[in-house]
Length: 289
Length: 48
Image (cartoon, rainbow over all chains, first blue to last red):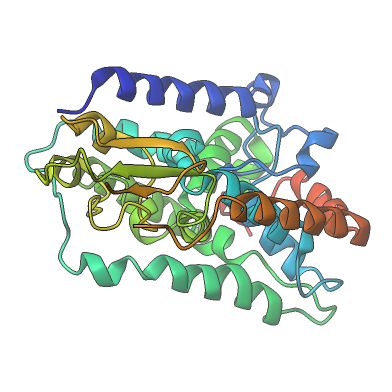
């Protein structure tokens, strides 16, 4: 059984962090965005910088902005950011700090006739996010450029549902000029968002599992990050309650540092003998006696 | 079972990350991010 206390704590951390980092309420009221200096700093989660409340920048949008710029073909700033945040937290960011993760968590609470635990082709679909990272976030912004050498943020433009939800909807609603400019692309992006909303009710975090390039990056750090899932093998009774409780479909006992683990802690709560813990990497992540 | 990566590895990666970030700021990448972030991103909201 998943501890309600841990789930409630996680929900509150998600809500407070999202509210705090998108706290420019005037922007929502007036249909404009914050333009202060904190926008030069990236937030850890997928948080659109054109959200009227956003006080910081989206790391994926920023990476595309730098790579699409004619002056740079590599981003030390964003690579450094991913190394720093990834090595400290890994995908804890996805589970605890990402606004779009929160959105999907809330959507999955809606009742549905049959919740889908595992979609057909799940294993292959997991690789899709790496392809999106490589093609839409890195290669297309770098190499498809106009006559002055300026590229476009392809992922933001054609895929990102977080931008549509956090920036598109509030700005189109509050800003007359933007509303009049909305056309086919806005319809396309709304189609993606509405599909993901529907899928999120049926499947737990489909965007995080299959599409999110930020999750793909942080997932690579799960094996080396400071905070890791630790298994005390002397306590484990191999009941697989941890794996059954995992909504990201991770085989916890076999692979506690899976790239898919968002460190939500449901396995820790489900573990009767208390063999699991998420803790700083001060000891080996798997302990056997 | 001993883990492949020692406890020194995350702080080392974090330190490299911090150095990279400083290098990026020095190269002017932070200004690119700020310039993009303080203007409404039409691509992000689905306008252009």
